[in-house]
Length: 296
Image 1 (cartoon, rainbow, N blue to C red):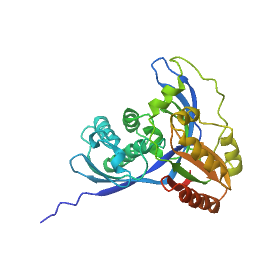
Image 2: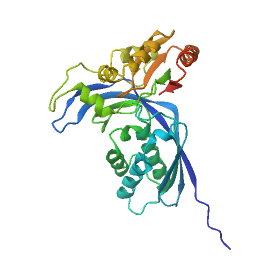
Image 3: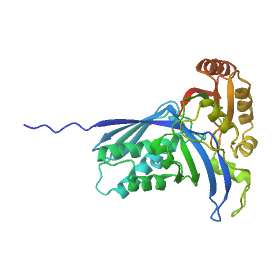
Image 4: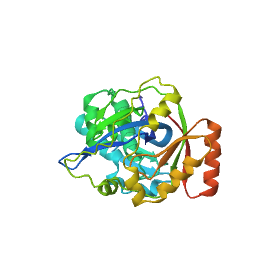
């Protein structure tokens, strides 16, 4: 008697997306903001599991699960539905998300979860990550989802849909710090008060390329900026406190806010400096979310 094979269990990590730079170029007539951003990804983050050939479903656990909101509105399920629209008859399944990244934090946690869901569905259905139908499903799901598909360093432009080539970078050692102040992107953009059709003219982006030495890379990143930082600090002044603490840490080479906040990051000269800074920050601010990271 032939037994039916057990459904496969697949797993994908959903790393934090860090905007090492974030230049706002202006605002389109339809209200959407145009950007130019260099992003990199941590090596750890949320974990998404998938059991194929099950009814489409999502369960969530983990330290930041309570803040993840209504499961029915979760980007993982939205991504799965868009995948099904792009690939009629595709195998779906049941997802389980272990949520570790803070929510509404400027590090693309929900978008990275959605991208992980699309990668899992692509594996289960034998779809290439370069398939235009998969990329279209990512675009429908959210502006940051396409860049999260590959989860590797690259430039993103426009609304996030224009992606530059993947860049090979030296590992960047640092800390990611969130003070526990959720901040919605739309509120930060509203505070920036850029009129529809308007341009910012804040300045161009530094040149970045594969194979840069870490000193040259950090130097180039230092010439960039996060144009949302000032508005975010006015809405959540604690962001300024985080940046001050990180900037003052021995060995810190660069401290900046990621995305629309309130998460900030700092790049350090070595692992020991980062570890000492983490220990000191947690001692002084035990309520902050502080994680060591290697970005690439």
